[in-house]
Image (cartoon, rainbow, N blue to C red):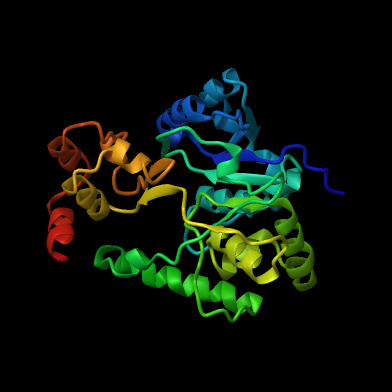
Length: 300
């Protein structure tokens, strides 16, 4: 029997020891711009809890990953690390704890650029906005299309096939979407349980939880779908970062259109925390290489 959710909206962050610097930077910006005092719930491996004392000191909840043990697999899925796989399962199963009607999935790499409110994410007391994009800019970006987008399109098609959803569009979200308690309850009770599927089984079909949620919501319509464009700017690779720098865009410029900036640390982790306040020459030197520069400039 599920616990009745207490909060209309919480922010949900899954992190671990290697991301602790990023998580602390996230917490600083979150605290500075969280005008409405939206609760933040952090989930980390049991062995890492002490590294995140700053979150509990700030009054936020820190949960051990073992709280989700009944849903976690013992092996990786699609070749991803077991830690990454656990992250994806927890994204989908967090609602089962009954802590919130809606949870906004945020990342350690995010930095909030201006004040945000509950009304940026919920249409009313319980109905979330559905943040959607078909990513046409990424489809036409050679650097991203060849390395990620074609595989991602196949993963999205797998979800559509499993649901029997024939809509020709692909409106979804990379992350940062609002996951809804009722929508996920229906996904479990109406789709997963009759087929004997677990959360791990969903990832075996397709390992992208944000698209499972966004496609299900559009297919099942558990509440009025009120579309909104993404609320944060996601920099996927070094080529996109280079273009941003060449255009002369600062964090202040980005904040005119977005609440936050999210840098994929896959290409920049060794260079440390991204800081767009540095001179452009320094940013390019730290977060890119000659191959990325050539790709951004000439598509090579």
